[in-house]
Length: 490
Image 1: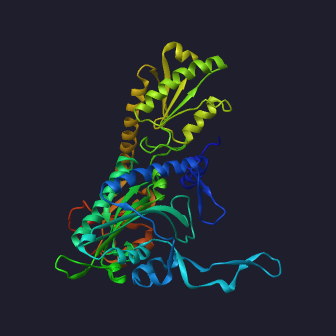
Image 2: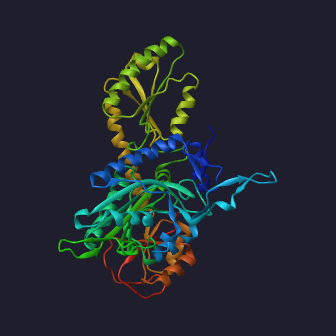
Image 3: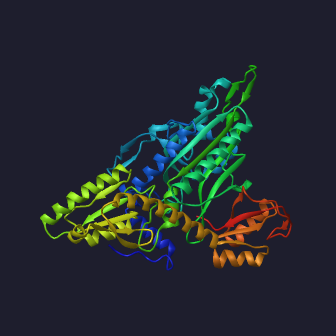
């Protein structure tokens, strides 16, 4: 197995190589789209499974809506169409035919659609068209819907998982009787996303609000979580939007309150995508390959037998199957790799590259001594542990590794978070150090845009836990009441 480019030499190339060499994804024949390979999809399934459980525990139900959206729907919400117009793929015809000159297949001009269809970039419009028929009375509220789907946004510059023309995600869409209930919902989901990233992905995040220029198209407020990658760039890991009554009014979704009075509902939408895979890779992985938090690893323990003949393998297998059963009884996901077509060294390298948290090696001498070798992926360390009680030891190690990855990511963020009060210091940090920069901003779109043009850094969010603090804008020198979070970002 070929070695990866070192992160310090070329972080971007390291990432691209790891995604492909680690068996996560590859570029497809369709420009800008990816093929998610079994190992990558198994990780995504674990992400999906846990999030789906959390959504359902908070009262949400899954549904599914069409991938095609009538073009006229987009014209009903002006900000929404403006925000997505440049990314839309449009279906104009519904049939092909053979060219008369035999040159191949062409679009049949007689099969032009009466109304063009947009390939789903997001589903607010098609969903709110349905909500109009679902919501009649206050008894129908709140309506808490989620869907797992694919979306298409026509990207010119793509990178596997981080930005692709087609990607997988979940999108929640909810309707409420009051403004307050909708805001509580948007904030609840933000907290849920933060909990998932920190508890399961071991990725620490900053919760905040987007500036007006960075809001979701059609939203009154966009809440977000921002994570810091190892190269000092930020990654927006999830968003939750308070939509006000914009979509309800656009699609005339009203309900009769307890007095019989008709009111437009209040709305939210929220989502995370396969971009989380990119966050997982760039937060934890190293020059040897993928590093996975145990809670999301498809294989948590790989057991590799070391033997020279069938008799040794038979003896080892008997012990391993008992150990495997004990581990699985504790809830561990275990693979016993007795494939005779691969050497142990190849298997060790494979599991290291794919980020399996713990690897166990057992040979004849280990059996004699009642021991086995346990290798930790997060520290690239090995130790001998007794076979008696090994299942409990490995199970406890999962918690140790999960905590270690989170604490390591916290340490990286702390070491790469800076505060500055002057423009020269701001430029120096952004260009030479990277990371998060806390600085004052005068609150204007003009200043925000000028900072972006000068440095390529953007306001990632206005942190929810930020305190009021009198200061002067780092760029304009105008008064400011609080610091905001700047960074270059993916």
